[in-house]
Amino acid sequence: MLLTAFQHRFAGDLEAMTRHLVDNVTVGWEELGSDLLDEAPPEIVAALTDGDRWPSRTLDDLITPDGSPPVRMTVTETTAANQDLAWGYVLRPHGIEVIPVPYAASGPVVRWNADPRTDFHNPAAWPTAAPSRATDPPPKAPAPAAPGTPRTAARR
Image 1 (spheres, rainbow, N blue to C red):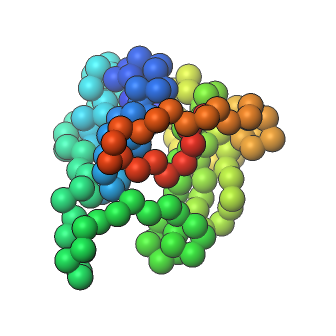
Image 2: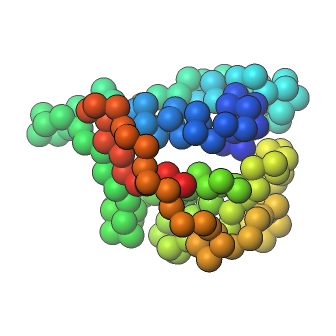
């Protein structure tokens, strides 16, 4: 879905996609929905969703057990295991890095121009770019966040 969103809804504009997915939510996402596929060809949407439609949902209205306001967290190996997170995604200039959270500090980078209908059940067959960490350019200074909008990491 993220490949399709990049290619169609955001028309290859990584900054716009990053603003939508990272900067414009207070806490984070409960679920990314089929609305990310807006502007994609119907045959790709059908292949990815089996014809189902559902909205993205944020955690912004989350109520914590102690009544305190929700806060954005960063993911570490410890919190990943405690939160039952299976995958992490890093939006990079040349593709999306897919990290199997409990097992690795980095993962393969799937090229942004990859066919989103690729069978992603076998990571060894993914259409990948060069290894992620070793080939990335030095990070740019992060763009200023809107007031009251936390950032969890510098964008590249």
